[in-house]
Length: 176
Image (tube, rainbow, N blue to C red):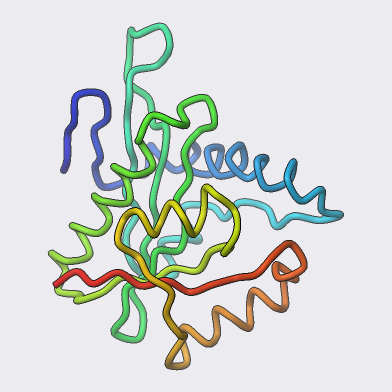
């Protein structure tokens, strides 16, 4: 789908599913270390993600030995109720701070646009530097949830107790 000098982004395939779950589990450790929660929800399986509708993209880069490529990050975009929603972006911590997350999100934005959507929403923490400020740098801006699907995401976050770790925020980027 997209290839840059170090990272290539493509549609996920069944052979990537175990890596996707592993990446999210390892990336979530940053939140666990920051928040020190009693409980953190486990990573969703790729199969569960695909059952929600939408698409999964993976980013591949050379491993440290430089002898083969491996999946180092992914994005999951849900397509529901006529909307496109960036549900999850995760990059292996060992491959962080190289711009891979940005490239994966940009690829997800392009794919979403190609699928005919005019905007892409997400929900994130307002004050963590690797959350809302990162997405702002990609053109996302704070927005208000509208419609049953997006309001349902707010309720799901409340039920999971995510607000106890900081202010949650919806953001939207125009793809026009």
